[in-house]
Image 1: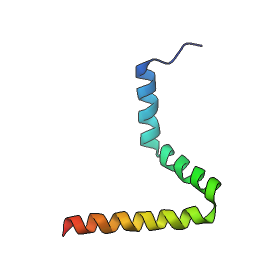
Image 2: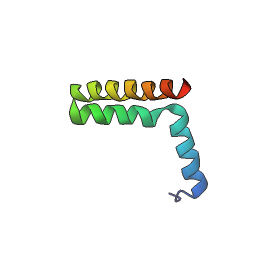
Image 3: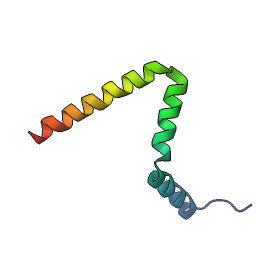
Image 4: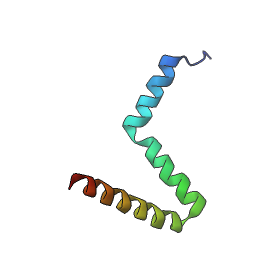
Length: 58
């Protein structure tokens, strides 16, 4: 089997980014490691980020 070159790696990364798979894997890995607590913490992180963005817009 041929080795992946830089172009192949870039195409693979672009595909992962476009599909949202990296974010999905992040969520699944977090849930697997921490369980329900991860969801609670993730919701807090998202709300904190939204507050920051909102404050920057004001």
